[in-house]
Image (cartoon, rainbow, N blue to C red; front, side, top):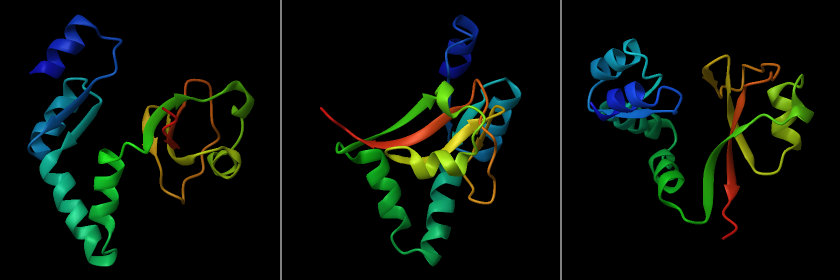
Length: 129
């Protein structure tokens, strides 16, 4: 409900909604809340990944709980527009996890889009407080 109110009052503000179930997440996307996370799906997929990678759960917990680094979503700099995501991953400081390209999250290694104006990078960087 809060995400819908934010969308109505400030339509240009990026909004993230956390729902308990996948069908609620899907309904929110239909209501133009573009970034939704289903807590049930997140937990289920984390546990499933843990079958092949025993430390997957710990990795995700550290991503959200550490004060040593920050996960940032940054606009693509003009100097890298026209470059492939793989090249930016290799040359940029920090760990480039993926990009928001054409409105969709791309982080799979088998996808290598050419970055465009308006794209955003998801980067893990040390927190320099």
